[in-house]
Image (cartoon, rainbow, N blue to C red):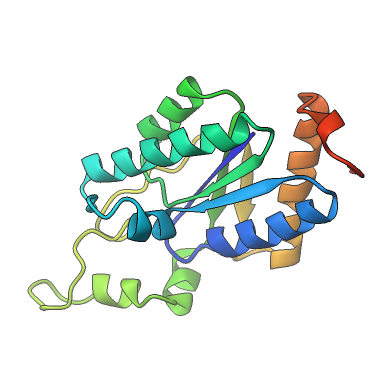
Length: 188
């Protein structure tokens, strides 16, 4: 199973992925996290932030995620993943891709702003430090119309969000008979 986390910068995708991995690990469910920022820094240095490059980033992540998933490893792809057509492409290309929209109110994102990106994106035009392609501010984010799971990190605690994703994964493992025999101590 591939969990395709998507949402704006600072919504909590990476934090949620880390906590979900820990909780699934306690049930002996193998999990791999593919953090888009990490892969960009290490493997995809050639990609920028144009629409084409963002799409290519997701395609590459999807290809690698499928390799893990085909080995019965729940794979969480943590990426902004702003374009609906690219998400649909992955769903159509690989088996058992589940879109998880990790949402957060913009005012909360601006307050969190752990990377300082919103501050830079909201600078006046012409400012030398202005970011002109921040998803959700001055670059589009196409909200998934029918995600398999919707999580709002500004309305729920991290614990509640983790519990929802965990329950979703466990239900799908049972429903899809997703290599249940390869997991020890699987409990819902």
